[in-house]
Length: 109
Length: 111
Image 1 (cartoon, rainbow over the protein chains, first blue to last red):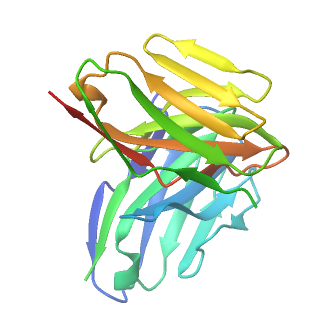
Image 2 (tube, chains in turn orange, brown):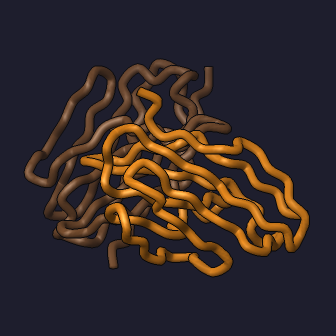
């Protein structure tokens, strides 16, 4: 039982490059989330998916897209990375309580 | 919408008790959570309490809920240096899929 897994763990991008952050959970949770964490800002919700086939914007969705591929997987895509997207990204899934992945540390130069 | 507030820092001596406080605004919050984040890691669920409970104890952790004042606290008994971390409070309102997180309290434990 791996819980929530995220890949990659670290990534450096140049401005304008694109990438997809992968997330998978094996707890049969319906809800999945993408957050970003910046110093002094706490956790900010980017997108969430209440169930397979649905996605909704969170607090800071601009510059991101998501795909809920199936019940297990929820990916986050940066189409044209900007330095303001330098952050630590966490995926989470939730039944009664949330389980978080280990995070992806992204730097955009 | 829901707002969750926490103090940013707490410093204690090893062996003392730590009390981390949290307030929330939505009286319909059904579940309240405490998460721990160690440096370089994700958030780990420590404990949660349902809104019809006043207290929950789990080994060294005690959660107290005052629904009237919308105040939640986490007490860590016999605090150890390994308890140094950021602690997040979160609240989930009835009918919502999205928990609201506080900004986290950095607990520093001095030897």
